[in-house]
Image (cartoon, rainbow, N blue to C red; front, side):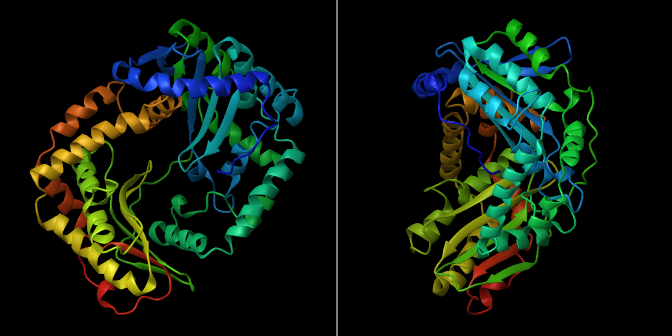
Length: 454
């Protein structure tokens, strides 16, 4: 999602920024004893709350299920465009008046779109939250989608699309998504095209907003200087005026189409290589075994097998990583790297060899212990190091359907994984012929492109 800048910082917002910087040093230590409460309001709204009074800031993060996957063919980019317009006027306030009010109360507000949800965020000083939350209510309940704002934001997005049209990496991403997802909504361009965006009207935006923005469709997390009683009132105030139920189209489950090659030839100084294997759901009993396996293979920066073999021993790439990618209706294990054209075939062969070794041989107890330590420690640093990070994490956990005690149980689930569990997950995910993307000059030789497994 593109970023849209508001007016210069006012005094209240400058104070908010200063306190946010102060909070970064104050919050990390407290995360170990973090208590998550479930708060239920009288209008049926539910939120997860973490109270934190070290700094007088309140952060709210929320997500309405149903992102770009809800678009019909020919509507590509509608949700992304809509998400750029929520701070462009609401209720009786036009764009300038709305943004001035936001600045006056010192609130940060942002919306962005994903495949499966439209996300929103606000951070504000605790003593200005009532004024800020009223603006948030207006944005959520009564966005204006004025023609002037629509034209301006649309022009910004189209400008980015036109610039990307000259980039072979962008062309590769478009071709990749189409190849591995076929006619599924995930194959479509989230930012849209110049043609699809040109067709979007204010009426289209209002109709889509009415479909998605409902009380029964929102996931909410709040952190900071607010208690459960106050939050109940605020939840009703912000979300209580929305319709009870959304109107979402069913989205089919899908798996990436493997065993194929996507090639984008261009005279680039490097070849980009991407391999995709089957993925695994967060709720699958083997998820943590697969997560640890991926960490050992290529997910652990500076410690993984792929990093050691490709980067450290041979200097074939500046970086290489593997990741488990999960959406609501698809998952994949993906390996990405870039290397010189004269090294690309050899690098690809080496990656395949490491994948085969992971599928065929046990990891060592030392590798597994190190991976567990890194993953457990990294979660606190990456997901719980600030009030905003905590709010983001709590929303994502709810979107995944995980329980409120997941963070407490997570370490035990990781520690329970054995070497045999990792090998079983590796065989399950890495024995298929992957989808392969090559961007840049053609690779010399066919050996690296062949082979069923790995």
